[in-house]
Amino acid sequence: MTFEQRDHCPSCNGTSFTELHRTAYNAPGLQSFLIAYYSAVPQGRHQEVLDGGTFSVVECTGCGLIFQHMLPSDEILAELYGNWLGRNDPLAPSKPPMPLDYYTYLAQEVMQLIAFLQKRHGRERRLRFLDYGMGWGNWAVMAQAFGVEVFGVETSPVKAAHAQSRGIKVLSVEELSNYSFDFISMEQVVEHLSFPRQTVLAMKNVLASGGIIKISVPDGSDMKSLLRSWTWDGAIAHKDKIMAVHPLEHLNCFTPASLQKFAEGCELKPISLPLGLIYAYSTDWSSPRAIAQNLLRPVKRFVLHKGCYGLFERK
Image (cartoon, rainbow, N blue to C red):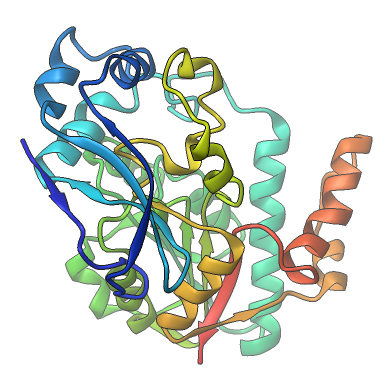
């Protein structure tokens, strides 16, 4: 199993980078982190798969994207997503239900998008949504409950089968060209992709007239400063800090500025939902925390343009 160096920025195709961090995968600290994080993997398998690889993080001097310079091979990624992940997934159907605010967030986002798109297309048209990288299908099922025709793409056969059992139409990537979609959700997907620009361009090609693409990724705004002093010794206790550029998984690390440049390079332009519409379809006012989130999150996203949640349409 091998790693391949990315000689071009996966966002702007630039070739000038600044290295921010470098650690061999067989270094004791990083190896201990991976063994603790992927705790269900048989002993010795981490080293067997990753031996000879290097966790190198660079920043593109052209567009500011931070990304893992050494790309895991398809064989490594198949091992990672097929065998290493998912054992402790809190969203798995075998686990207890998520807290209620998880489901209310899904519902209000779906309602807000439907209300906005109905203003564009009219109420008589049945909207068609695509959830690209849908996981177990929770968001897709929520959209379906509000009368949307929903399709999904998911590389995990187990997750895809579960979503299909819940009534979601599962498509292969090759089948997407036979359809067009009013809304495409790419929630926590683009950071995982070896070739994110090509994938988003393919999604743009199946976007219906007046359609919207959502790209939501972890915010890596503090990653440069973090990596300057980062040590892997005891890092598992601080795993959330490194999550935006998590080894092997989060191959691309965005800031709000680099996400906007990425979208521009895909010939997409940002759009904002009206605050009045968002507030009208916000459903959870059950606690001071929920009230603050409902009031402030839309301002952060669509007025101040902070964070790495974006809605985009064709230029």
